[in-house]
Image (cartoon, rainbow, N blue to C red; front, side, top):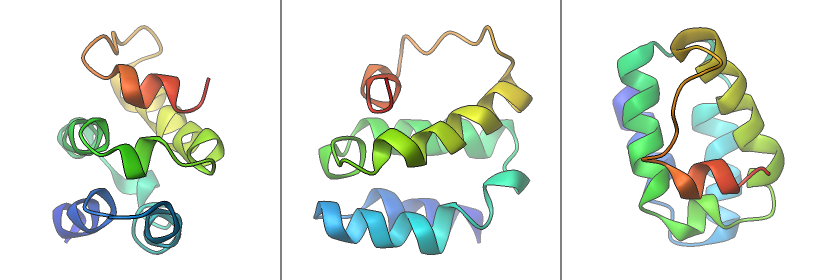
Length: 89
């Protein structure tokens, strides 16, 4: 189910749909994501500018970052995910 919801969010074709899909599919479940779920999500975010380039990503992706800090550690190297990292900085 989580994989389906991540794909739904990351397949957004507009900023507006990404905003809605984040609220529906990611935000309610982010606290349940494990390491594999998070890496998969980061990989998908990285490849869609409608997801990482939207204004709301500045706030929304901080929630993902917080969960990543919990699961992956605060020193996790995001070098593979510059679009994700830049989306909220």
